[in-house]
View 1 (cartoon, helix red, strand yellow):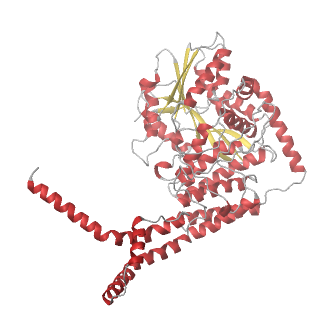
View 2 (view 1 turned 135 degrees about the vertical axis):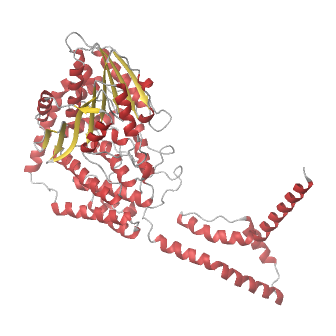
Length: 601
């Protein structure tokens, strides 16, 4: 080694050690003054350092009698007073800041050690369909007693997607074919119709009994409180936001009327956003869905079918268009972008088995976003196994391929497209999870549309919501409040208060979306739907031509609506979209496209 470099290295090392020895006790004292308040905030005792112990022992043995030592100590004290002024200011800042912190006991900072366990209640569900499992899962709403309504008496559920501790029963108990058949196949319509009329009768009895009804004044007051609270959260006015959250908690309830249940969820979302843990809260909800058995989603889906025919209508629209396109086909291939639970396809398999001349060779490529955890394709693969059993029972030649991937990364080669098959692309309400132009000009939505255009399907069937949300928090919150108030009102008017499963559709289908839209920002804000009028120019620019709605399909969908559903629910055709809504408010639309021979970005 060069002697000069060796000398410089030793010289610098000695200088660093000298500086460290000189400043050790001085810096440790200042560091202690800074760190100790944080330990107190977390409810922990500040640890005693070895230097403090040695200083204590040396002070007990030191001689302070000489005048020179007194002068030195006086000078040292003066230095400490001057040096502690910033520390005193820091303490004062901490004291003032504590007044504005959200009142969340033991706010979690380590998700591995401070996890809040999920309290599961046992609810037995028995009806004509035959659900008999007693486990129940909470997807974001936990019942609060009157004594638990204040936020100071409860804990915000904060979970990390990977390091969560969830008291959840991940049952692999098989669900009988009879249960699935009654919910998913056509011959289950008679059972569903009977249940719908039974609910209508119960609702009429409740209305005639003169029980307590929702007060419009209370409804308006909760709306006002929620908007004012959102305004406080938008500017991080913690003191005012917490006061308003406490008032909302007192007037809301997970078991109350529609606006009360919605206010309870929105309060959770606002509190998570205020505390800066919205993304963790949302990931925790999604992680619980991964562990949940399929029976919970089937129960939620069945309860939603009893309340409103949304799913029945757009599944009917899609399946009838597919059957018309594949009337004489020997091979049929459906690419389902966002297959979710696969509830749409058993009835199509059943219909194909009845086709004149025998069923075609049926192939489904089910595409879904990967699940968090070690088995990202577990659910999409399980859907394939169940559909294979249905196809076997109906003697339909069947093949399934599951893909768990980000849609924009899928290539044509992954889809295994053959020229001798009728190709259908189906996507129901899942494009909203793809990023839009706010992230890139060539955004994932356009890339996926371009992929669909390149594979040249016979039909591209698309279902979308009729809403969109602002990039700014306050108008977005108002839009969420307005939109989901309609859904909660619909469930409130179609499912009796005493029905044990009335919250399942809310917790499975609505709550995670509300939490994500209100509590998350940036790349963590995933739920970004576009209106129907926004999708039309996007698809046309991508090289698609919109097809007119078949009148026979509209009539068949209308027949489903007449099966006992509330008359305030409506279905109509407009601008080649089949629309569905409640009390005059359009909520969803479904349409069909075909690729143009030329054009597209």
